[in-house]
Amino acid sequence: MTILSYSLRLYTKIKGNMLILTYFLAIIIGISLGLLGGGGSILTVPILVYITGIDPVLATSYSLLIVGSASAIAAFQKSRLQLIDYKKAIYFGLPSIISVTLTRTFLLPSIPETIIELNGFIISKDIFIMIFFSIIMLLASISMIKNKKELLNKSNDINYTKIISLGFLVGLIAGFVGAGGGFLIVPALVNFTGLEIKKAIGTSLLIIATNSLFGFIGDFMVGVDLDYKFVAIFIAISVIGIYLGNLISKSISGTNLKKGFGIFIILMAVFIILKETNIIL
Image 1 (cartoon, rainbow, N blue to C red):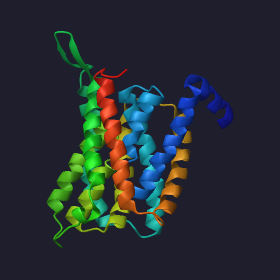
Image 2 (cartoon, rainbow, N blue to C red):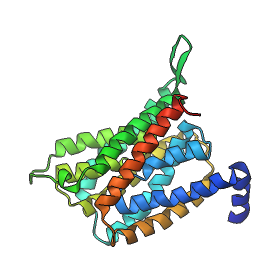
Image 3 (cartoon, rainbow, N blue to C red):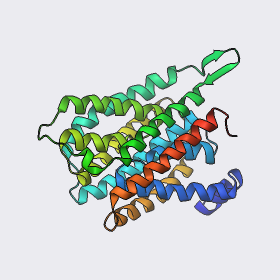
Image 4 (tube, rainbow, N blue to C red):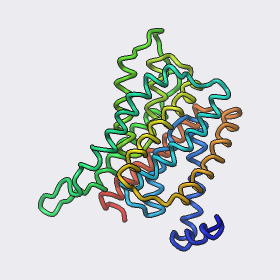
């Protein structure tokens, strides 16, 4: 089946305008990854759930594969520019890999389909994941709206204990919601290791790639079934965004873009909360 015929089949499965919007947002995800070293990954699950209609739990599997592959490509580009600190990536990345793998293999499958049921009030596993996801998005927005100067490490000491602890935390979050965790990784690398922002972004992309792909391996081992042609198209379009993000980074203020993106994430998080609590349909 050619890409054209497959896209036409998708066009009938997903309403035409929604498919176009999905591909457009895939570019936005790539731009965010290439420019900010994170942020775009937390858009992937809402896009897959609300636009393409994929089940929230399955959407986290899609997200891990898409984000992991796109971030790996972006990290390769950053490595050519010598914008990755491999030592710090190992200290942060190894605990993350362990945590994300354990989360996807044991924690997520152990959560019951109905978490709370009281007098007709029900919180299902899907709703819980999306609400938790929206909370993470709000935390992400705070991280992105902050000024770069607020994130600078005022000490030359590198706190490896905090780095390892944050690595475990990021892995847990990445495994649970299918996000790479760049919105936590970049500030952590700047705050606790003294990395300048551009090198923190490159290092973050490498960590996101390993986190996400190892998380997906856990899903693959338990037999998760994905539409890999759709994934391949989504990744290819995201890569276009990554190249655009790299170009934009040379000519635009990352600080202003981060603030704008942070505000957008707040609006999206509020929408998810209202949607999942049936305040809006």
